[in-house]
Amino acid sequence: MSPAEPEPVDPEAAEPLPAVAPQLRDLRRRAALTLEAAARSAGLSPAHLSRLETGRRQPSLPMLLALARTYGTTVSELLGETPADRDAIVRAAGMEPTRAGGWTYWQAGAPARGMQALRVHVPHGAQGDIVRVHPGEEWLYVLKGRLRLRLGDATYTLEPGDSAHFDSLTPHRIAAADRLGADLLFVHTLLQSPATALCLGGTPQSPTLRDPR
Image (cartoon, rainbow, N blue to C red):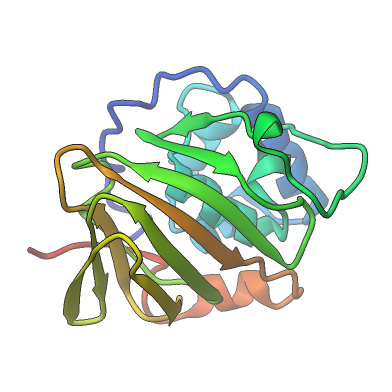
């Protein structure tokens, strides 16, 4: 999706995430990025990013992931979660669910690491028409339900116990294949190099593409 195109309507966008707006603005300024440069890197229009920063819209989980990569941080920090330390152990009791764009996710790894681990529930139909391209790597493991994964021109249906590990520069799309949705473990790399914004913003393809089908 090019920055000039209208953003897709997100039925879950009204869910309250009060910490997101000020965090997005502060992190962008800390990264010394203009609104236009940050929006281009995350595959958004400047107007849409402005609405996110002022709290008039709420980001979906894929948007949070894209913005976290752009700012070299984690989804947890975008949401204002700042644990006192980086414990190697993450207890189930401490995994608070967060909803964004219809997805539900739980932090499954320590923050501020080179990789971010999440346990994710993908409902049927949520974000299923968005194809993404960005630097990094992704690994996922299906826990429950069936997942439809598109990588480039190939489409795969993953059953529980199946996994996928791929370069995120391969155009990809994740969607639940069953009406009850799918649960998965998801690990992605956080690119914290100063060249990240240039790489995201300077590629011939936008980081986010509409599925032509």
